[in-house]
Structure formats: C-alpha cells, structure tokens
Length: 166
Image (cartoon, rainbow, N blue to C red; front, top):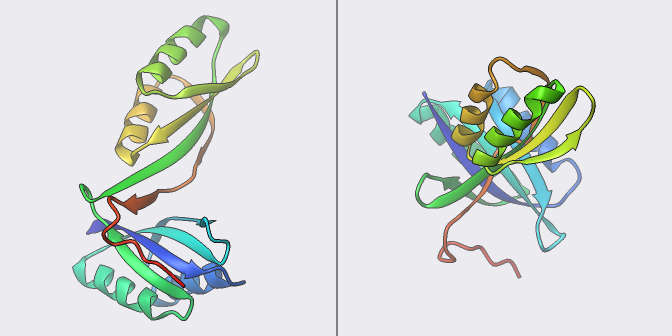
C-alpha cells in the first residue's frame, strides 16, 4: 500500500466535488485528504486528492477520475517532480512559563504563533506532511486542545506539463 497525490483541473461546476468524492465512495476507495480551490481563471478549480492503495487500485482511481465529465486534466504529483504543502493550525494549552519553549520549537520549524491567550497558543505551520508530523511529535507532553489540517495541495515543477484551456 502506498499514498498517491493526484492534482485535478476541473470545470468549476456545481456538484463537481460531490461527483468526484462519490466515485471514491461507490468503489470503496479511501480519500486520505481532499482540498480544492478556484484557479486564476474562475471557470476552473484545482483539486488535490491523496489516496492510499496498491498499484492496481491507484491505477483504477486515476482512470475512473479521468473519465468524469468535469475533469479536464489529472496529474500524479510525485516526489522530486512536484511541490506539495499542507497547513496546520494547532491550539496548545500552555502555562505562561511554557510559552518560550513552544515559541522556540515553532521558530525552528518556521511556524508562526498566530494567537496567544492566558492559557493557550495557536501555532500555524506550513510544510510537507513529514515536517508537520515531526512538529507534532515534539509537542508530546503538551495538551493539544484542537488541531486543524488542510490536507495536501500541490503542483508539478516547471512549465512543461501546464494545461492551457482556451
């Protein structure tokens, strides 16, 4: 079993995300993460999906998604030929005397403290999944009150495989 990141360019039509996620659920495929947003051209949306499976399942996912009416392009985002990132927000319970150690760890990971209250802090961190997981491992011993992850988004490197529409 391995993870595969897919980048889809789709028409920005009502229900497109529902049709794509429905394809996964009908066939029993799991979605590890799903993120979408309108592109520079509001007629199109970029969707990034992370799925886990064996080679046959991942190949079937790619073929089935490519057949959908609204899907204009599908790319596999591979390590080395693409850039992927994820955003997390972590709310941590901290006492006043613990704040500096959290700030130090956050700075090492190039994160930001985006909120401080009397008993908690919210940290924003952007990076690869492994970077974010490593940061969370260093928070052992602190109480994580809430955690929000955006899921992976990404693009291929260079301009060779850019799809131009009209």
